[in-house]
Amino acid sequence: MTAADPRPLTGEPVALDLLNTRWMIDGELQDLFAGAAGLTRVQGLAVWLESTGLAGRFRADAATLVHLLTAREALARAVADPADESARTLVDAVLEHGRIRATLTAEGPGERAEFDDPTWGPAWTAARDYLELLAGAPGRIRACASETCVLHFHDTSRNGTRRWCSMAACGNRAKASRHYARTRER
Image (tube, rainbow, N blue to C red; front, side, top):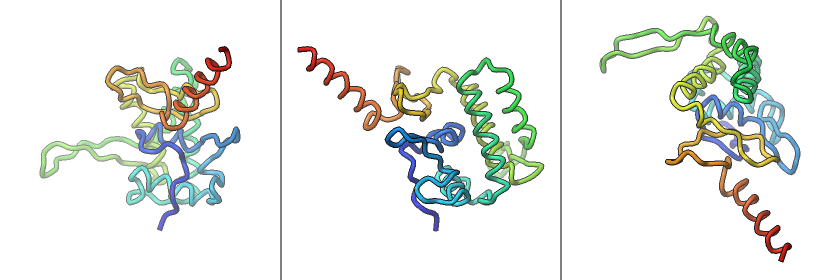
């Protein structure tokens, strides 16, 4: 049985969910893959694999974790600065470890991911997901507007104006802070 996921934001697309394995609590950076919530590094990986639906396909082991950390760094750099050529090179280096094979299924045409080494599977899957987000709506990949938050989200709001990772957390704090500032001015 996998431990509970301690992260404040889950359920984002796999690429952003990987970035969200680092978050802030009371001004202190937490890392799911570095002992957050009392989990070992590999236990944190198992939690992440479970939450993204990849647990049945990939193992939580040290090699997989190393490759996933490589992908997380590459994606963090690419999301922070999409024009950064070195970040694109890092993402491409992760993508070199897998490919999509066309298949024919009972339902018709399909695709299957293949990896030169299965321990690259989750890292490749996250990098591939990032490409799909870029192809669909690159402007909807966002960092939370809170200065004290490091989380990312895919803005699926109708008008594309979502600013906070969560209205219940960062958005509520911002609204409360603005309200407090207005009442102090009076």
